[in-house]
Length: 268
Image (tube, rainbow, N blue to C red; front, side, top):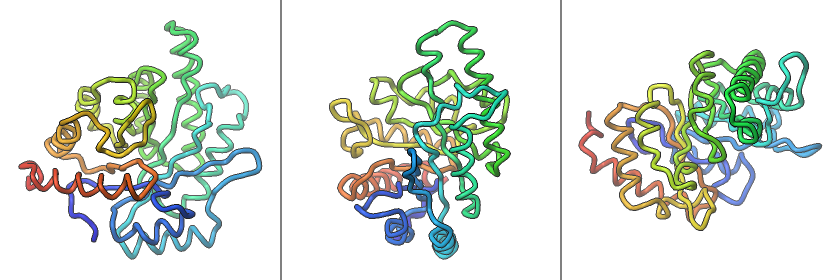
């Protein structure tokens, strides 16, 4: 049964050991959003065929379901020279074009930070931000409304590095709380400071350096504090439980539902 929550509770498209469409068929009655995890590597990809897109759209209409589309992980948008075409931009635009019919809640995108990791100086950061902004604008022209582009923080570099780009373009944030946990940082200050610009929140545990684990692997009390922050701030976006198995997803979903039910902000 679909939960009745102030925000949209989401899953990934790979909770069950099957392709995207069988997963969405099973998950549509249980969640508000499904994150379509898409890849395109050389000649291989899992981009949905037109018939699959049509059925995904039908499932969304029947179950009040939205989709977040996670653009391929290997994009290097901040390295793209704004004066020429770049393979990462072309790849991103193909994914946007393929899924545009689904009217996604958000397109989640990573900005590779290799340039600012190797050279942490202000000039390198400014160039990185400029290149990222121009690349995101090109992706938006493929049909991804700028506000629906949600840049996700990564554990490899400071999460505030792309905030000037967010402000310049009016795009959104995808705050991945698990990436903070993976490097031993408290995610709450960043979440609370940036929640009004946030369209998607990713949540997962971390164990022995491996993220995307079940919520039982979060530090004690952190999940309750995260949910309290979302509820007290009136967050209405997507909270994706970003795990990839039934064993991790369903206990985590049940735990979120029980904590929200017990939270006094849930009725406000």
